[in-house]
Length: 126
Image (cartoon, rainbow, N blue to C red; front, side, top):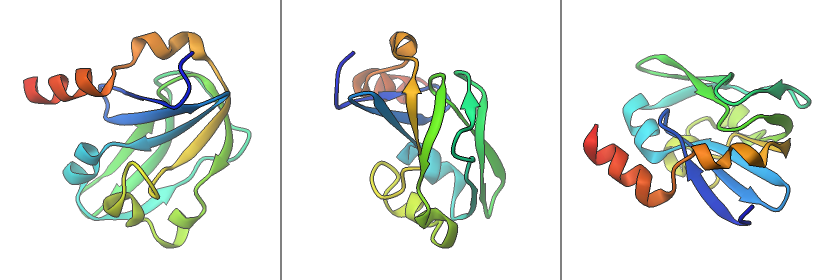
C-alpha cells in the first residue's frame, strides 16, 4: 500500500491514503457539477461500508447526490465543519472540504481505483 497517495473513482470521489487511514471527499469536478452545496448528511462514526455503497448524501441547489465509498471500511471520523459550513466542499474539495475518514479500510481494493493521471484521462473522455 502506498502511503500519502490519492486515488479517484468513476463516481468522482477521491481517497487519500495516509498509513492505515483513508480520507474521503468529492472531486473538484463533482462539486462544480453539483453547484452550491447546501447540506452534507455526514455518516455516523462506526458506520461500516462496502466499496461502492452509498456513504452519505450531499445536497446542493441543483440536486441531492449520493457519495459512494471508494473502498470498504469503517467511518472513523467526520468533518464536523461541514455541518455549519457545507460550502467548504465548494471552496476546497480536496482540502478542508474532506468528508470523512475510514479506518480500518480494505487496502486490497485500491487497485480498482484511478490515479490522478487516469482520472484526468477519464474526465477528458466523458
